[in-house]
Length: 79
Image (cartoon, rainbow, N blue to C red; front, top):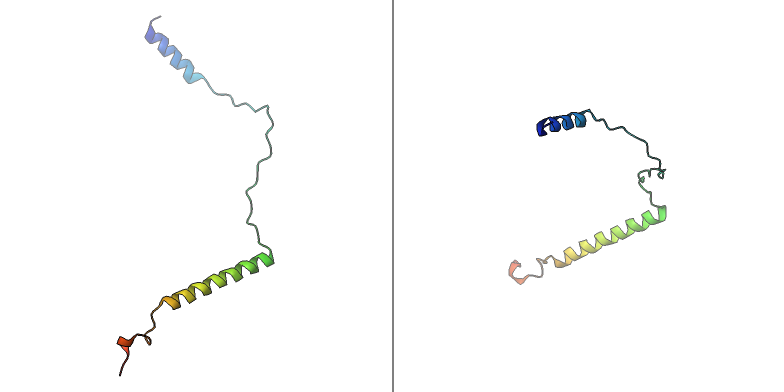
C-alpha cells in the first residue's frame, strides 16, 4: 500500500462516517421563558409622569430664562 491509496481509503471512510445523534444522559434545568413586559403599579406610573412633567417645565423655564428679551434691549427700542 502506497501513501496515495492509504489516503484515498481514509477519505472514503471519513465520508462514509455518519454522526449518530445521541441523547444526553445529564438532566438540564427547564428552559427559561423570555420575560414579559412588566407593568408598573399605578402609584409608580403616576410618580414617573409627575417627575417627567417637572423636568419638562424646568427645561421650558430654563430656555425662557436664557432667551434674550427684546424689550430689555436698548438698541432695538423704537422711538
